[in-house]
Image 1 (cartoon, rainbow, N blue to C red):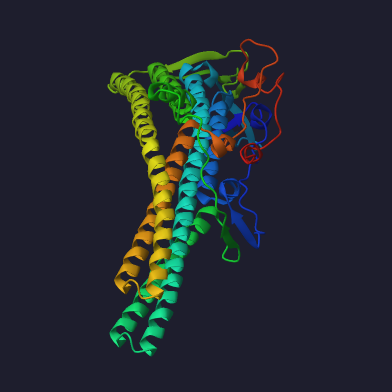
Image 2: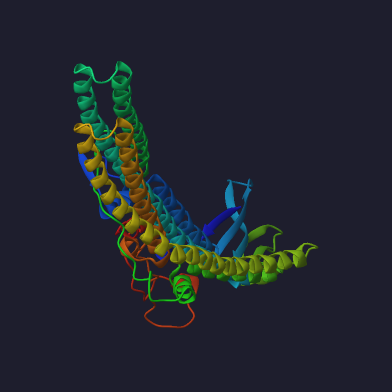
Length: 462
């Protein structure tokens, strides 16, 4: 049996020679990371995003397969005669007409809806990956600041140690007091070294997320997450409603629901298995089989309902219910996230303001105590206490700023603002029809304005 497709798929669905493009082999010698450069580098080099693009290619090919399944094709049967000279006779012709099967059309529409959902999935992955990378960036920045205040503490205690050594030489303190002063400074150096080691691990994680080679040197630019317009002046319910409207997850779930409905109707009409026109070879007057005649075509259809027909429809109904339930879950998740963010913002702002004041005050206190210590007006314990309080204030300020940055990262991600507004996913739009009305599968591709850009080009414009 020979299967011949009547129309070329290439004429119907256009070129499918789409190959994924990966990060360029030529990497920069160094890169300075800030929220903007981080976004560009991540969307270009992150392997998870590249893998998602491959899945988008797969979804596009599924549409092509579903379209191809609507095209008519021939089944040709033949026999070889051996009387006289061997010849090939066409014994049967069967025209299979899958475009007459309703389930094939619903399958095609379902694949189109799933492709739209996959486009949204690609953008969601980009947004989430950038949110994680941005949070990691601010964590690295905070650890760098922690390291700096420990280095500053070590330098201050080194100066105190010099004063203690002069006192030791003068014979006014014991060797135990000198060693204690030296140890305090060395402990500060150890903490700075610990933060430096932690920062190197975080830089390695950032390098992996960006897909940068070891030869690229990474620098961290200091910047705070910008203020969000949604922080003040609006109720949480209004912000949550707008977030739900903007959420690509909500649009994705809508496409998934449409696909599930199409799949349900595909199962409803699944009892119609096939439709065809066929003819068999006729017997001539001498009793020999002749070629199949094209003048006596007979139509036929394969129809059957099994015991699994109704349960499969019920299963489709429950799948739709699950998707609609996920939409309600998304609303609740957004409300919970925004309530936690917006009610905590003022607390973090207040913590940052108070910690900054305390740090300034404790710096003045420490300077006064050190000057008194130099003239013998206070003891070494007061110096250590004042320096420890200054360190605690610095740590509190950095932590408050870090918490505020992470909170605003989540808020900007939820509202698709700031740098997240530039993460647009694929700039893909379905070609528009010039004239409306029903079109057979072999008429697709005619009278349409098509784009010759590949998926890679449409999805690499961020």
